[in-house]
Length: 113
Image (cartoon, rainbow, N blue to C red; front, side, top):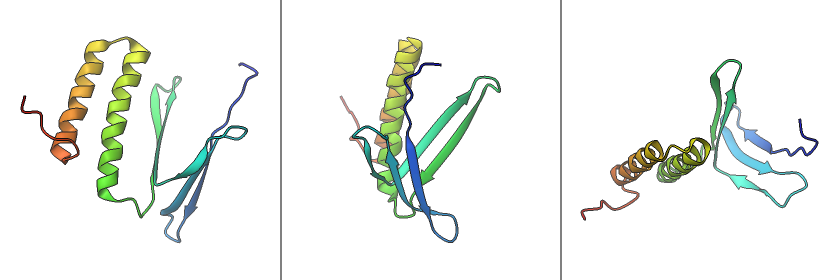
């Protein structure tokens, strides 16, 4: 493993029912830090060939904001998939799906052109 190590820290304040009330993140030693209303962390376990997910959102997260969050994540995932695999066709399909999803949620206007 490389000697250059970086950390990302999350602090989650929970209510009495273990529902997140506040989420804070920080990258120690960097300028990156802040508060957020949602965080989805996905980790790949190559030995198990399985994905571990941590999906968090505060109880104050609005549905409209969650829809925008998902739409932007889908667009980002298509770009990441393209860079990671070089598979331009599947990445384009993913992006098209995200655009259609955005139209159905009313986030973006339908392209009638």
